Amino acid sequence: MTAPESLITLTQHIMGKQAQHPGASGHFSMLMTQIGVAGKLIGAQVRRAGIIELWGQTGQQNVQGETVEKLDRIAQDTMVEVLRRSGHVAAMASEEETEIIEVPQHLAGDYVVCFDPLDGSSNIDSNVSIGTIFTIFRRTRPNEVVLKDFLRPGREMVGAGYIIYGSSTALVYSDGKSVDCFTLDPSCGEYFLTRENMRWPERVGILSINECNEPYWPAGVRAYVDAVKARNDADKRRVSSRHIGSLVSDFHRNLVKGGVFLYPMDKNGKAKLRVLYECNPLAFIAEAAGGAASDGKKRILDLEPTGLHERTGLVIGPKAEVELAVKYMSGQKP
Ligand code: FDP
Figure 1 (cartoon, rainbow, N blue to C red):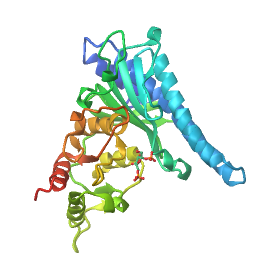
Figure 2: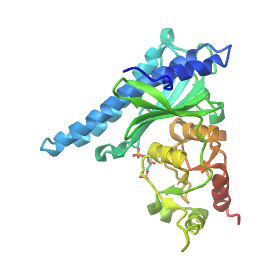
Figure 3: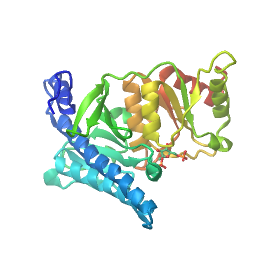
Figure 4: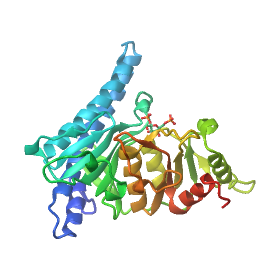
């Protein structure tokens, strides 16, 4: 296949951005390219899982459960192996591992990466879109990895992104300045730029929240959700509810189409989503796209996690909408 001149590959785009920073070492660019490779490998396995699932339904037992576990494991091993061998990563933190995964000194590079290898994995067996979410920090010390490399505010990130395995495989990443989306062309195995400098639409047409959690919500969340629903009247339907239950997919749809997502902390202070590899990367992307992300009180990127798997509430969407939700949640009358 010959690429038309208008098509820009992920590598070309990353190199172009690097050229805007004359002092740049190119290591970040190379790391991003390698994450793209990991996404291709994981995406290929996700696609095959559908076939295995079909076999399971024709009589082979245990494939469904085993596949889910296998895919989580495959995604985890792929991320670890590709990043370890990239030469640009000193250590990783993953949803799948309790502790930090250190890279041997001779392979270690400048960055530490946190990731959820397969977000929304409870949806695999029903063919719902899932994804890999990642966050990149620069390491704080040249010769050793410390917990502080990971347990720091998200505003110190240098990059974040996700790869979504949906109707197509798309890679979205941000260096904090812009958000760009690339779609994998499976016929040639290359990512091409399909949405440049994405901006979060200000108009909220979609509300994403698991409403069955209402009994656990703190008071302000109900008030906010009611206020959003009240935007619909006899004349016009202005908002619609969409909740996939796969964070990366809910986020991507809202970023493309205009929506707000909430997974608030419950009234006892318990939360579901993880700071390091779910909320932080998506908050970083949201802000770079002109949106915002809050835990209900504080900006997500200002949180100072004390554990690798710490959880928090999340409200993420257009800036004005997140501010409005936060007002309701803090009991103020907007
Ligand atoms: P999953 O458990 O399938 O991995 O944090 C993980 C996550 O999915 C998110 O992707 C999703 O938004 C959320 O949990 C869904 O949780 P609920 O089922 O509690 O709504």
